[in-house]
Image (cartoon, rainbow, N blue to C red; front, side, top):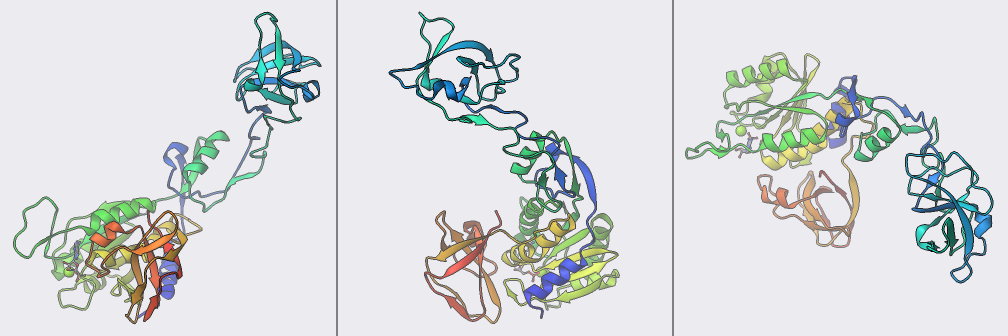
Amino acid sequence: MLEFEEALARVLAAVPAPTSEEVPLSEAAGRVLAERVQSSLDLPMFDNSAMDGYGLRADDVASAKPDSPAHLRLAGKVAAGEVFTGAVTPGTCVRLFTGSPLPSGADAVVRQEDTRVESSRAGEVLILAPARPGENVRLRGGDVKHGSTLAEAGEPLTVGRIGLLAAAGLTRVRAGRRPVAGLLATGSELREPGQPLAPGQIYESNRIALAALMEHAGAVPRTLPLVADVLAATSLALAEAFDQCDAVVTSGGVSVGEMDFIRRAFELIGGELQFWRVAIKPGRPFAFGRCRGKLLFGLPGNPVSALVTFLLLVRPALLRWQGAANVSLPAHPGVLAEPLANDSERRHFMRVKVDPRGKVYSAGAQASHVLSSVAAANGLVEVPANTTLTAGAAVSVLRWE
Ligand code: AMP
Ligand code: MG
């Protein structure tokens, strides 16, 4: 039985080198950037006003107060998107709006709230407050300098990053190709949700959850038909899955029972099992293999085991396949509000609820068939073998949503 780190290292070592493709920025969210992107622009591209107000020379208003305003002559108006062709000379100002280019000669903006226009003094603006040079001015290059790196190869194309790339004028980026991952659920007891159930049958629930996790990880899920616990049917389904997909994720049929056919079926179609069984709870009977340059992830059928092994061992592989530099689950510090006990010989990834202040509670019963505690959970805490973490213990919460 492999330790988790060893299993993960072997999975990642088997992932094919990423390839990339050009995609419209509008379709790039959630994908992995394949090459460094440098800015061909300064952002902001020109000095501009941060406020609706008046562009002026700070010197002219150094001693302005509400009861002794500075009187400036209004020399023009610049809407956002326009430019002022003249210059702000001593004793003058220009009406500006947020984003208006700062006219030459001006070095500060006084916000509209600190000014007054009197109908009896047309063409004049009363400035009621002083301004420091640079006040309310957004400087060219103050956000991003021309030539600087906007994002590195291997970084996720987050919402923030695609916004930044658009601001720098990009319309397309190179992203890691998304692996197509087949989803095959095995078990003669399984029926599609919505179908009538005979006694002893249950609804299949792993594929829908795993498909959503695959999408989150940037892969392309392909949900395949249910497979009965029959060796021939299992090998046929696996062979067809490997024809269509880069990776095949199975659930169920990977344990020690005589009705567990995944490993035998995989070897029958020419697959090479790399390892089986990992010292984690839930999810010990995890199988990993290679077949014609493609990968098999054999997850246990218990829904919680399938979820946890996917998060710990499949998600990292799907991300690395796209070239992601960081393939770990996001982890946040938390403090246990109640004890978490693991009396097993294996480390236990326990379902927890973490509140916005970092207080961590058990999400409920921890048996590997209990889905209500998966639904209640928003994270996992790893509890070492034969260990009780006491209330008040600092923990790292692995998040998946
Ligand atoms: P197995 O790993 O095939 O021995 O299955 C372990 C347990 O998980 C059994 O109780 C199965 O009925 C259940 N199970 C297996 N696959 C699924 C699935 N796709 N959806 C829901 N339950 C499942
Ligand atoms: Mg089964």
